[in-house]
Image 1 (tube, rainbow, N blue to C red):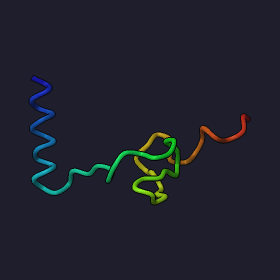
Image 2 (image 1 turned 45 degrees about the vertical axis):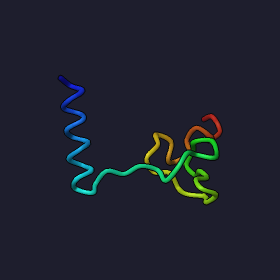
Image 3 (image 1 turned 180 degrees about the vertical axis):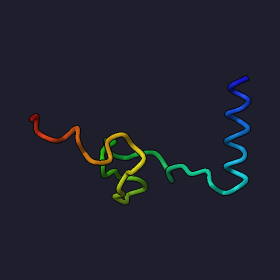
Image 4 (image 1 turned 45 degrees about the horizontal axis):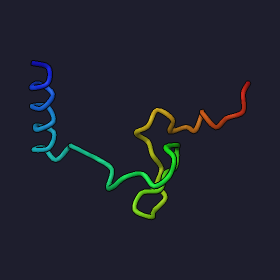
Length: 58
């Protein structure tokens, strides 16, 4: 039942042109900046968009 609700929700987003996905696979490690299609981009959809995992320990 949950599966069908999620499929419906995704279809509604697609029909409203609100469904977004990356233009291709990541060519670099997932961090605040990534390479996709040969272009460096700022990745705001990850849990690490501030680059906190690369900060020195406190």
